[in-house]
Length: 520
Image (cartoon, rainbow, N blue to C red):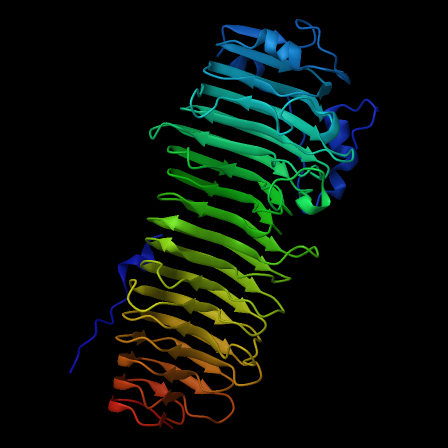
């Protein structure tokens, strides 16, 4: 007889461009209330003495450079005149018009800091040269080092406006803070931010970048990029570490935060909502989403699939202490894609509303995955957890609570396991929806189910696999069925020291062993 280790695993303890002159604070106050779910924070003055001391030269773009801060004349020529190493360019209160790209590469220690400053881009038709960016700071073949961009609003209220505010590729030392895009990006060009750290040892932070008005699909805009813009991006050139901290992105046609990289990406806090493909989409190594909130509560006619989080590829992909709330589901809450070598999901709070979508999906070739100390509420048909594939690596679920009024009309089981060698330790189910709602189906072999309370309207457990060990369960059907159903393809099943109401419905299991159970 096979003996199974049923001690709890140590991993569970791990953890409109109008002519009105608006100051930036006034501007944000006037339009901020319409930003969906956003907290539009005005930029206070930078800690002037501290920041200024980091540069050999400090330029006031108005007083020293003669820039127009009424929003009528382009400031790009002045930026080109004063850009240099060890230089900080400061923007006093006002509106700053830009009708062409400012490009600066191979720099060292360069900064742009606004104080109540609003950037006003020309519309798509009147933007001179590449119609894609305001600031291109470093390129992959000629990057900069030590870049600061801080304290700007960006006014996209006019028709056919929308542009990449900052595209920065640096070797090390990126700091971007307090950038607020107000107005819908309806030009059909690149989304507001792209950030790459090119050195494997380099680091950078993008903090409080807010773009909550979203973007139009390209079919509804003059530009012609595929599908439409993403909110923020990191690309394959990124090899270092970048942290997106307390950012806010809503309603982007081609992902909210889209970071498929060769480096590490950290998403720390913030709110990500309603974007097509995924509100957060990550690839790299040792990536982390922590303390974030992901929401899907609205759709457009063009939206087809709005996942919450999509982990695309790489080893050691982590999502912890994160809320995913799908009030109007149009995609799964979290997907571990085939090219993920491993994933760790812990302390998740997932809600899937009144449409058939899944909670956590582990694709067929995704590697070993752990789902620890998490709550999943599912309100319609769909799997709270769906584990696909056969031999791609163990999936461990431990201390997981699955609740909700989901029905069993399409996907009957709250948890569907098609993979071998998986473990379910203290996984609790309360599934009392109609139409044959069940707790778990075990289609893989060599599966452990240890403890937990499993309540379902229909049959809590359906077993099709071989080498199944079930111990310490408290399982009950609310409509008078047996707690466990063993189909005729099942074999080598052990049920030990469990409270299984009304016993087992054995349809031809080969090798059933039961002892120490209460089947009353």
